[in-house]
Image 1 (cartoon, rainbow, N blue to C red):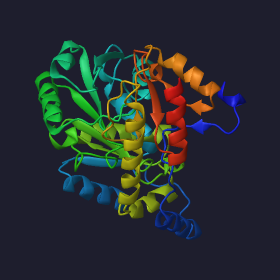
Image 2: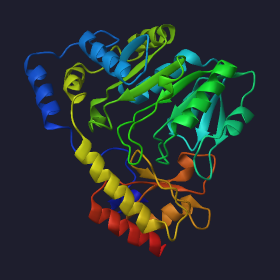
Image 3: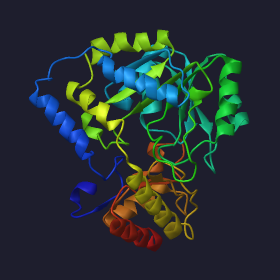
Image 4: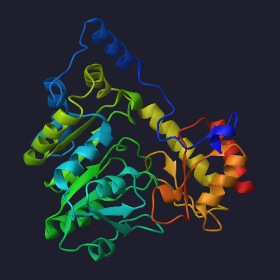
Length: 343
């Protein structure tokens, strides 16, 4: 349906609408011209891993080992490949990033979904309800895609206690940690629970989605297994992107975050009277509930109005909601609000 539409308002994309910082682009060009265009170490260049390790320690994440991955999604894939055997159960809060359950299924694991509706909070009793003797891994994604939800320090501490109680390994997808609108700083479960693989990258904070660069940090045995798999899966991360990432780590994106906070408020104020909408605290998504409980049907009606979004059932066992990205120009967001309210 979307392919037939001309000049759409596209709020379906999961990427920033700002460009890579100019100093990062300049650094990449410099290293291209210097001839740094070959394979690197599988785990990434030492200077980047050292800087990542220092940054993580500054945040209170005491990782034994750090590696560079082919995007944060590459880190998700490698960590699950390293941890999940056929029959193992993986706890996934619902709603979730689309790839989590499909990768678990691919590896012969069993996804067990933790209900976070209606307010998208992780309640300890809901987590423990899904734990069986086969449970091995808990995935945490905060700020969350698709809801924009952020777990509080108290919620993260409760998760850490549960993971410790049942001997779970945690995969913490922190890719949106810079996109916070209410809380002053991000709290990663990797700060509170040592058996955590922390994943992050440069696709969101530096708009380097096409550069395919992420990183993983955590217990040495797990990261070393991930490095071994990466060697035979991807060889290494992109060389130029790694050099540019050394600069990207120091880039200031505070003006972009301020702009996104304004866009978040615009979307929330514009939709809250006609839609059941939890105010996003982070990332750049909103996840409203369709008034008739059918997010897929609403998305199809919106496409006919030249508005693109993603049905909630792509991110959830339920189809009641839909995801829109507010990483777009304000005039497009205003028009989208008008269309949605008319539907």
